[in-house]
Amino acid sequence: MKTRMKEYRARLGLTQEKLAEIVGVRRETIIFLEQGKYNPSLKLAYGIARALGAGIEEIFIFDDDQT
Amino acid sequence: MKTRWILMAYAAISLLALMLMLSRENLYVVIALVAGILLLGHRELWSLVRYGRMPVIDERVQNNLTGAMRLTGVFFFIASIMLIMLLRFNVFKNTPTELIISGQLVIVGFVYLIGYYYYDRVRPYLGERATRWLKICLITAGLCLSTIALAIVLHNLVSSWFGFEDAFFFIIALLVAPAVLVISLLGSLAIFIKGLSASFSGIEQA
Image 1 (cartoon, rainbow over the protein chains, first blue to last red):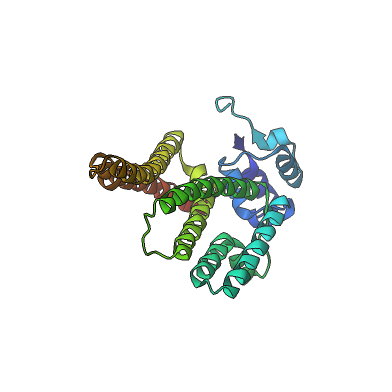
Image 2: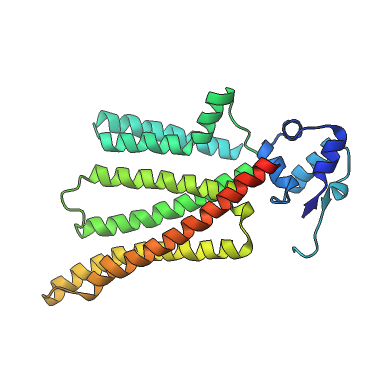
């Protein structure tokens, strides 16, 4: 799974820490998500997308090769 | 939320056991329990000392905690069976039982700690191949430990049944299995450190 979290977060001028606080997760979780090292649950993905003011499919891009 | 309750229940049971052991003056077990509690709650304690609040337990942390607890549970179960077998055949002569139990408790704490760091930091940065090799090394190490215990028991049994000193299980228990164990543990450690260092540099870059 690829994400555009970093790009959207930068647009809003949010730090990883601030986004983590809004979503209610640890900063490390945001780091792992941005690096594509963790696949979030639908609930977390929705929370992040909402915090970044975008749709889930805009933030998280499903990679067909990694099924 | 469920994980937090499990942790709190675990801490409460540990404290109760601690008080019980203190009253019975089993100091080895008391030290082991304190060490175990510190190992299990190191994140919470660190967060309380540094930030003055409990750390957030999000879904990723919950998954990691569940994985580490499952791993520790399996290890504890296997270690207990092996320990009972070894105690049954009086392998630990002149060693106080509370010292043996304390050793097991501390090792279980370390297994939990390593398990947590594996799920939290190492696994995301290991490729498929490295993960497969780590599994192979750990399974081999586990099998070697079981083989050592089993070979000691079989050596004692064969020696007492047939009336001569058995050499086959003796060599397996003292030479072959420990050698394979050391190799597999070194392999696991190398892969673990590789993943951990990749994780630290990955998080620093973020």
